Length: 136
Image 1 (tube, rainbow, N blue to C red):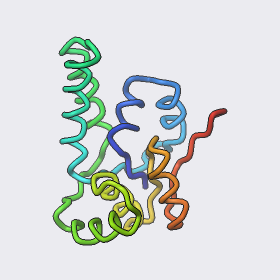
Image 2 (image 1 turned 120 degrees about the vertical axis):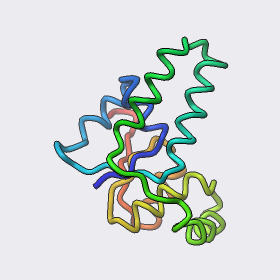
Image 3 (image 1 turned 90 degrees about the vertical axis):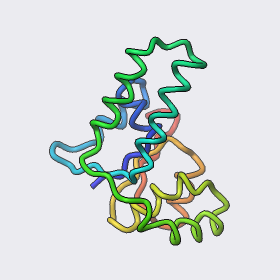
Protein backbone atom coordinates (compact mmCIF):
# COMPACT_ATOMS: atom_id res chain seq x y z
CA UNK A 1 0.00 0.00 0.00
CA UNK A 2 1.18 3.50 -0.86
CA UNK A 3 0.35 6.83 0.76
CA UNK A 4 0.84 9.44 -1.96
CA UNK A 5 1.40 13.10 -1.18
CA UNK A 6 0.22 15.84 -3.51
CA UNK A 7 3.64 17.01 -4.66
CA UNK A 8 4.73 13.48 -5.55
CA UNK A 9 1.46 12.97 -7.44
CA UNK A 10 1.91 16.16 -9.46
CA UNK A 11 5.45 15.10 -10.35
CA UNK A 12 4.14 11.73 -11.51
CA UNK A 13 1.50 13.25 -13.78
CA UNK A 14 3.91 15.89 -15.09
CA UNK A 15 6.30 13.06 -15.94
CA UNK A 16 9.29 14.75 -14.29
CA UNK A 17 12.41 12.69 -13.63
CA UNK A 18 11.33 12.33 -10.00
CA UNK A 19 7.81 11.45 -11.08
CA UNK A 20 9.06 8.77 -13.47
CA UNK A 21 11.17 7.26 -10.68
CA UNK A 22 8.17 7.19 -8.31
CA UNK A 23 5.87 5.77 -10.98
CA UNK A 24 8.34 2.95 -11.62
CA UNK A 25 8.10 1.94 -7.95
CA UNK A 26 4.31 1.51 -7.95
CA UNK A 27 3.42 -2.14 -8.40
CA UNK A 28 0.53 -3.21 -10.61
CA UNK A 29 -2.72 -3.19 -8.62
CA UNK A 30 -1.03 -1.65 -5.57
CA UNK A 31 -3.53 0.36 -3.54
CA UNK A 32 -2.81 4.10 -3.29
CA UNK A 33 -4.41 6.14 -0.52
CA UNK A 34 -4.15 9.72 0.70
CA UNK A 35 -5.71 11.92 3.36
CA UNK A 36 -8.65 13.86 1.97
CA UNK A 37 -6.68 17.10 2.29
CA UNK A 38 -4.77 15.85 -0.79
CA UNK A 39 -7.56 17.28 -2.98
CA UNK A 40 -7.21 20.73 -1.40
CA UNK A 41 -3.44 20.66 -1.78
CA UNK A 42 -3.67 19.62 -5.43
CA UNK A 43 -6.15 22.44 -6.01
CA UNK A 44 -3.66 24.91 -4.57
CA UNK A 45 -0.80 23.50 -6.65
CA UNK A 46 -2.94 23.86 -9.79
CA UNK A 47 -3.75 27.46 -8.87
CA UNK A 48 -0.03 28.16 -8.39
CA UNK A 49 0.81 26.69 -11.78
CA UNK A 50 -1.80 28.90 -13.44
CA UNK A 51 -1.08 32.06 -11.47
CA UNK A 52 2.68 31.94 -11.02
CA UNK A 53 4.10 29.53 -13.59
CA UNK A 54 2.08 30.69 -16.59
CA UNK A 55 0.64 27.22 -17.18
CA UNK A 56 -2.51 27.34 -19.27
CA UNK A 57 -5.70 26.51 -17.38
CA UNK A 58 -6.51 23.31 -19.29
CA UNK A 59 -3.03 21.83 -18.77
CA UNK A 60 -2.96 22.75 -15.08
CA UNK A 61 -6.47 21.38 -14.52
CA UNK A 62 -5.46 18.14 -16.27
CA UNK A 63 -2.47 17.88 -13.90
CA UNK A 64 -4.84 18.18 -10.95
CA UNK A 65 -7.47 15.82 -12.32
CA UNK A 66 -4.85 13.19 -13.19
CA UNK A 67 -3.11 13.57 -9.81
CA UNK A 68 -6.40 12.96 -7.99
CA UNK A 69 -7.01 9.99 -10.28
CA UNK A 70 -3.85 8.29 -8.97
CA UNK A 71 -5.50 7.82 -5.56
CA UNK A 72 -7.74 4.80 -5.01
CA UNK A 73 -9.16 5.99 -1.70
CA UNK A 74 -9.20 9.12 0.43
CA UNK A 75 -9.12 8.94 4.23
CA UNK A 76 -10.99 11.46 6.36
CA UNK A 77 -8.56 13.80 8.15
CA UNK A 78 -10.99 14.35 11.02
CA UNK A 79 -10.17 10.89 12.35
CA UNK A 80 -6.45 11.72 12.55
CA UNK A 81 -6.22 15.37 13.60
CA UNK A 82 -5.32 14.83 17.25
CA UNK A 83 -2.56 12.31 16.50
CA UNK A 84 -1.33 14.54 13.66
CA UNK A 85 -1.19 17.61 15.90
CA UNK A 86 0.86 15.78 18.52
CA UNK A 87 3.26 14.43 15.88
CA UNK A 88 3.57 17.82 14.18
CA UNK A 89 4.61 19.39 17.49
CA UNK A 90 6.93 16.50 18.36
CA UNK A 91 8.60 16.53 14.91
CA UNK A 92 8.46 20.32 14.48
CA UNK A 93 6.91 20.00 11.04
CA UNK A 94 3.79 21.13 9.20
CA UNK A 95 0.57 19.41 10.20
CA UNK A 96 -0.37 19.20 6.53
CA UNK A 97 2.61 16.94 5.81
CA UNK A 98 2.23 14.96 9.01
CA UNK A 99 -1.22 13.76 7.89
CA UNK A 100 0.59 11.73 5.22
CA UNK A 101 3.12 10.44 7.76
CA UNK A 102 0.42 9.33 10.22
CA UNK A 103 -1.64 7.70 7.46
CA UNK A 104 1.41 5.73 6.28
CA UNK A 105 2.20 4.66 9.83
CA UNK A 106 -1.37 3.61 10.60
CA UNK A 107 -1.57 1.50 7.45
CA UNK A 108 1.97 0.13 7.45
CA UNK A 109 2.21 1.72 4.01
CA UNK A 110 5.06 3.35 2.12
CA UNK A 111 4.93 7.13 1.89
CA UNK A 112 5.72 8.60 -1.52
CA UNK A 113 6.94 12.15 -0.99
CA UNK A 114 9.67 14.39 -2.36
CA UNK A 115 9.81 16.44 0.86
CA UNK A 116 13.30 15.78 2.29
CA UNK A 117 12.40 16.80 5.85
CA UNK A 118 9.33 14.57 5.81
CA UNK A 119 11.49 11.72 4.52
CA UNK A 120 13.86 12.27 7.44
CA UNK A 121 10.94 12.23 9.89
CA UNK A 122 9.82 8.91 8.42
CA UNK A 123 13.29 7.40 8.75
CA UNK A 124 13.62 8.65 12.33
CA UNK A 125 10.24 7.16 13.24
CA UNK A 126 10.66 3.91 11.27
CA UNK A 127 7.85 4.69 8.82
CA UNK A 128 8.35 3.30 5.32
CA UNK A 129 9.16 6.04 2.85
CA UNK A 130 10.56 6.28 -0.66
CA UNK A 131 13.77 8.25 -0.68
CA UNK A 132 15.10 9.47 -4.03
CA UNK A 133 18.73 10.46 -3.86
CA UNK A 134 20.59 12.55 -6.45
CA UNK A 135 21.33 9.47 -8.59
CA UNK A 136 17.85 7.96 -8.78
